[in-house]
Image 1 (cartoon, rainbow, N blue to C red):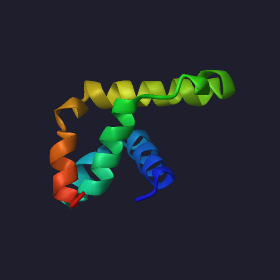
Image 2: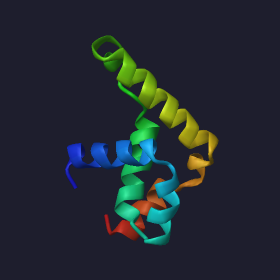
Image 3: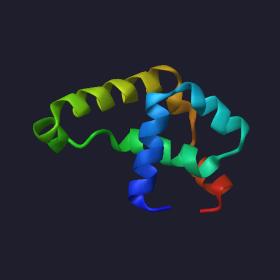
Image 4: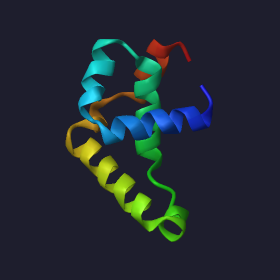
Length: 84
């Protein structure tokens, strides 16, 4: 999966967190791994200068992802399940 595709998937899941459970039940490991990688990398600081509203939105979504328990996902395990 290309980096841009991973980012789009992660941003879609951050915008609709209820889909994370659906992806988990459907065993969509690659997409969940993309979400965890994106969230752990955090939002690029440069975005605060170029698009402050998007920066705040992504920071808020990532914070909510972790507050809802997103840190329990093992990136290594998800990548193994995804066949990476």
